View 1 (cartoon, rainbow, N blue to C red):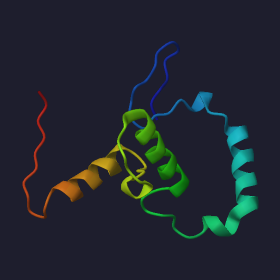
View 2 (tube, rainbow, N blue to C red; view 1 turned 90 degrees about the horizontal axis):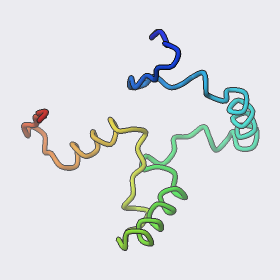
View 3 (tube, rainbow, N blue to C red; view 1 turned 60 degrees about the vertical axis):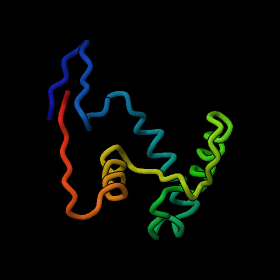
View 4 (tube, rainbow, N blue to C red; view 1 turned 45 degrees about the vertical axis):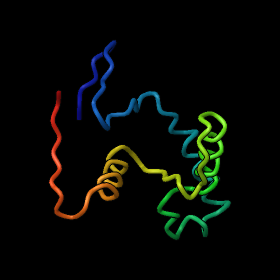
Length: 103
């Protein structure tokens, strides 16, 4: 556990501001969602992400950037590590060398 120093902000990866998180509200909303659709939450979801969100992103990209794409071309990841893993799997073949260097 990392000690918090009053007046300082931590930029450590994976260390959220737990003192600012609305746990009571989150618990209430989570419980309501489970009561409404528990059967839908049991199976695995689409591995590319929640379809309505992907559709909204595709629509936004088209309107804001003038880039035509469909929801099937949008992938939602759970974070940067998963996104980097997907990129590596898509762009590299097994056995290809890969390196990273700071500049």
